[in-house]
Length: 197
Image (cartoon, rainbow, N blue to C red; front, side, top):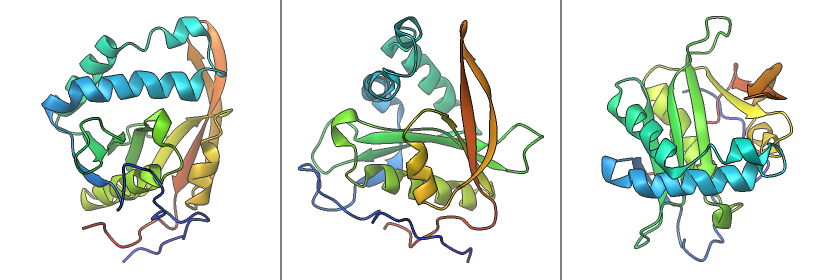
């Protein structure tokens, strides 16, 4: 079994009024696309409202998000995992995982998106999704794992708390707007606690 770097925060802490236990993580279905698209738009605006121009945020629409999610779900390589609470209709969060395609990085798996509904942050949902995402990639023999984050995004601390190392820093463009992104990876150790049943 691969070693586990314990996070500084308890990934099983659950204080959300929707949760009396860790969220259920399952593979997303086509019927989830509309709800996931709404979540994606809300999460982008909450996470990047102070980091990106409004013109770029307006490009993240439910329609475009739905088209992207349908493409991902229809393809054989990537997977979408969804976090949900018992009896709740709206998802709490989701993650997209699959192979890492840039040959300049020695990482086989990539977490391409991980978003939690804005009203559900800091409830252990992101940790449950990250745990499931990495196990999914390990099961597909797509490890070690990499994830990219906007350099000014406070979510960087989340990946650092799970033992990820900073491995790259490069420019990123949203239309004419230039910013930077950073990559975190788990090269020598992955956050592999017990699987959630």
